Length: 124
Image (tube, rainbow, N blue to C red; front, side, top):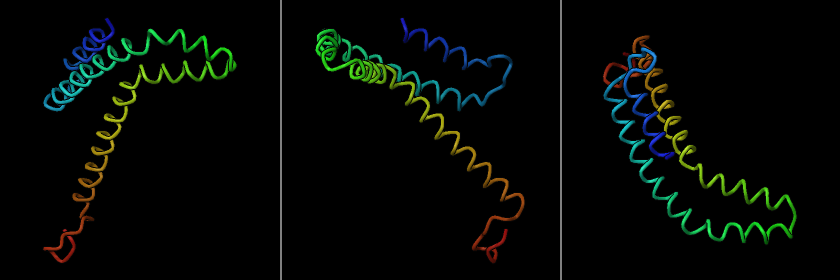
């Protein structure tokens, strides 16, 4: 099953893969978040397969009359619907990374004395 395979990969990543020591509270939070997202995605996938799959062959047969480019576009759209969870994982991880980079930049500015403090004459 695809969802159990993805869950096993996330569990492997939770336990210091390749000897990397990770921030355990952050890893636990992200793992719970991704497990819940996988749970939601599997329900979405089941609903999509139950409602769309019986009509998919008929739809592809009808689209064949309009040209191969329309069929290829419909297949790409269907694959995009099936893999929307990967895009969501990417967005979550990218936003978290962006947030961490901004925090590190602000921390660097704080240690260099370039962050403004209104209580100390706008200099720290």
